Length: 311
Ligand code: OXD
Image (cartoon, rainbow, N blue to C red):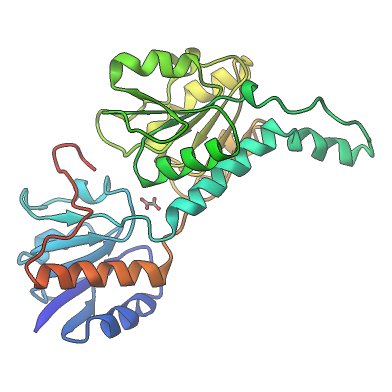
């Protein structure tokens, strides 16, 4: 019997994951993590924000499956064996939601919906100038599944779109910038900066004053990756000085965002509670079950995390 442990400190109703996972893998025994319980000697762990002692207790794991795209928190857990394979979730309904989220944030600015909302309250019938797409060049940091889908979506709507990533990725109709050398040129043509990068020591704090200063004037920031990418005080001072026009933030260094945090009341900041893209349960379970089955058949599935790169 193959033991699989489900370990999430995030889900209050783990049975909603465990029951369908058990149906998808009838020959395995799926159990829920319980604090202060003995190990179940699991071969596989299915996790999201797992308990800190997961790897200290379950020492026979052969692979871990992360129920999200970002593995930054998982890689920090104590006792994580250096050679334990980790598989991230690949899309599972997330990239289309991310594309919608970014499109919505972009349109609020580019189509004047923010101003029309204010005008409605004033009973003001006042058409704004027509949209000029070339005034809204979008720059997407990261060309994983999320960044790629966003770039394709916005390019299809005829916005000028560029991406920036470690190696540069070819996407039809999108200009690719690659590596540290091309970062300044990427920023210099960007007015709407979207962050989809994985959080690693190399990307932590990348949304900082030095980055913001290089953007086109009246720029917007959209962060859907991790709160730790952003230097909060730099964002606030660049908004207050008028160099930046606004920011749409879905992720924060501390979640939930504390009620005393200055972001809540800032007129140029739009906040959502880490909901830009949810992994859809049905698609996620199907994908994780297929990957476990693949390993049981001796075939390494896709989505393996490169531990050196940190994603
Ligand atoms: C993820 C997330 O990493 O939802 O998938 O944050």
